[in-house]
Image 1 (tube, rainbow, N blue to C red):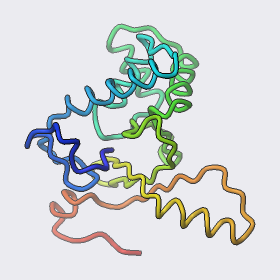
Image 2 (tube, one colour; image 1 turned 60 degrees about the vertical axis):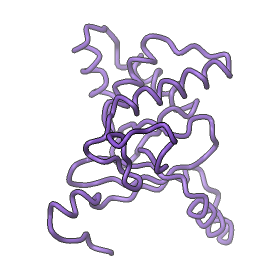
Image 3 (cartoon, helix red, strand yellow; image 1 turned 45 degrees about the horizontal axis):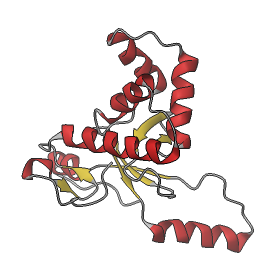
Length: 181
């Protein structure tokens, strides 16, 4: 879900190769950064980052894989927390409303956002083999979508791009390249 090469404070173990994290990176750094950004955003907006919101955000950021609402509910139960499905959905709505997570419609699942507070429409690269998801926020892609839609009179509601394929590690492991179709 990282789209930047480095924030200047990462070690070699935190390396990011393109939008996908290096398999050996220190994932605790991703979680710590996500919490730091979420705490700042909530403080700036006068919002509460409740215990449940923190727990759900942590579950989503525990990997670079999307988490479904019922997966999150199961994880909360494993942690000894009681939560109803509606409570989890309300928590996810809050996190989405404030740009802390994105919903991937094709997977009906959620991923953490690297750019909370920045108005952007993400593009997501989703590996069909390992399940990792990387967020990009390329303004050129967003502009092309808006320009093309406007030229046809189309009113965009959800300009999210989800692209399925193989990440670099899975391509290397398969010994071939993905189709370019």
